[in-house]
Image (tube, rainbow, N blue to C red; front, top):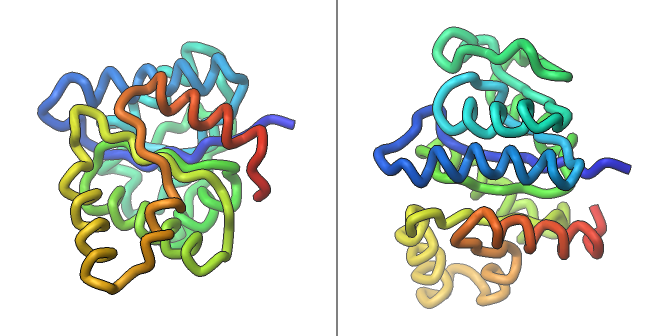
Length: 186
């Protein structure tokens, strides 16, 4: 059965060319492994880049976008599955339900919020899906430092760090996902 990778990422490209290249390369990797891309259905920023990489390489695509973001994120209608929801909560829920693993590429506060929600669900033992933080060009290092600060300040158990992996490159993301998807229970 085909595995599906949910990618949370920015609707902007950011100011480092490594971000866009990594999104494009992740799309290629998703196709190469015959996985399906599940993402926010945007046609801009890193969302557009990961979808482009996946589509040109033949991966199946599943996009979910709330109606109010259709114009801002340029809803990519040429996906295999394209769903318009009423709100952001429905978007996240559909993306998560339709995935076997989660990857966090660079992005803004929306991407970070999506990561923290699935991390919280894992902490509460609501799922055991693999979660990979793509720390491309050390983008997420301040967030990772904050998580360590939360742990050392006594607001989370050190086991929180075991609920996600950190990858510095797309190659590391692929290796982590291939290993995790062979053993993970959803």
